[in-house]
Image 1 (cartoon, rainbow, N blue to C red):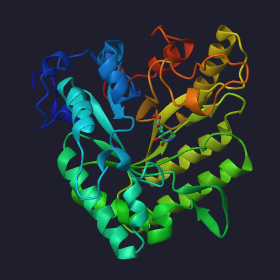
Image 2 (image 1 turned 135 degrees about the vertical axis):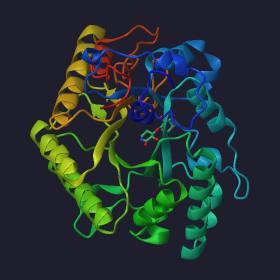
Image 3 (image 1 turned 90 degrees about the vertical axis):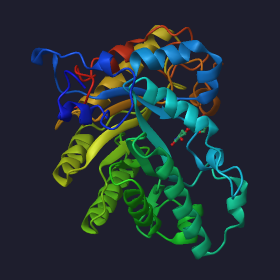
Length: 361
Ligand code: XIL
């Protein structure tokens, strides 16, 4: 570890890891080049990663941190009840580790992407048993390799009501609202060193619904903290709608409150839903860059987010093109690189936030 202090090595997630590219990262850097900033990265889809070397090159050259996009979801890991399938996840994570990248795990508990066999689980005790088996098995395998986890994903109701603050779905119906606490308890026991994240969407626009969602999230955090559970960060998905504003004031207050609670912020699934933005690529890309810059400024008032992770790399491959198609039939442009892997203005905004020493401050 020449050239790296222990603190820096821990910061880079390298301690204890056999990282062949250590020497490349270990070059001493003048203090003047260090500055507070974020880890920058991408969610990566295993099919693209295998099929097109340009995706791998982008990860190698541009990412500090990688999220396997779908490989750690229940549907992928647990096609059958009694057999885990780690093939895709192992490949994505081994690539990241071998190249000195951090890994963010997505997601241990989600109402979506559940394999069909879970529908047969009706009793509370059976659901609890499967949840425990899942978290223990997955974290045992990736301990020391996946530094942070979305422990729960999308647990707040889309439009919360006072009597129904949490999203209806499999886990709530089988285990009641305590499943969030259970998941954090299991995760912290299975990997005490992992950074545990509560991840959700629609946290940034100025609507009363979104303000309500933030308020409920803060309440859940207070509750989890009061019970002594380690929740290290909020994951803000940040699938930004081009036609919505960013609630600067609301977000500044929100991150201020997180800071007071000792909870960090990660941007976990950044992209721009451009279905209603102008047709002209230049105008559309400029609007996307402005939206992302506004978001990043608003959430950085106390300190920069720990990580800024785009939900994909190139406009060639994004869920936005499936779910939020444009009426004019033009291709979506949701990501930092275009279909030919040329950088777009939004990439310059994101890359300018990178911590200079490659580790977060
Ligand atoms: C999406 C993936 O991008 C798609 O490839 C997959 O088919 C469906 O899931 N919020 C989440 C992510 O937390 O897991 C979703 O990812 C996008 C919305």
